[in-house]
Length: 159
Ligand code: SF4
Ligand code: SF4
Ligand code: SF4
Image (tube, rainbow, N blue to C red; front, top):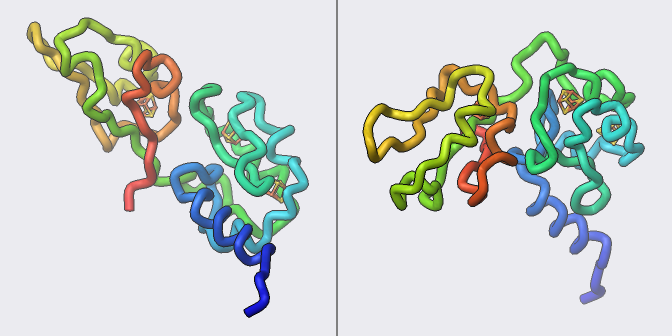
């Protein structure tokens, strides 16, 4: 059987472009992969500089670089039918804290909570305080990701 390098490459990119790293307001991953021309306009439009040239040349969000302030400039800069209207909810991403959080080792740290403007991330009172996320308040902005010294926070799309 003839080997098709392009197909294999697209398959690999499809696995790596997940709904967790898609830009806000992107309709879905398949539409994005099909229609994105990789022009880079959204990368240049983002004032927070959190959109990077990701796998296969597709733009992806990287919260290690900062937070999304939901300005909508990425979606508005795109000439392709990839994004929904910026008046709609941008995504269903929420912050999730994994077991590497320093609170699980009784080490004091409040870096994430200090970065959360929505007051979604709070610490229970007490000596063994662990962070708690109110999913109703969390916007998935990603501001809590970079300040965490042990990369204990992931922002994932709620399925
Ligand atoms: S909404 Fe604004 S801040 Fe968020 S990724 Fe798009 S351009 Fe960047
Ligand atoms: S502006 Fe649109 S077409 Fe251009 S890279 Fe961004 S998502 Fe793709
Ligand atoms: S993603 Fe944004 S809103 Fe959600 S907990 Fe982190 S800083 Fe707060």
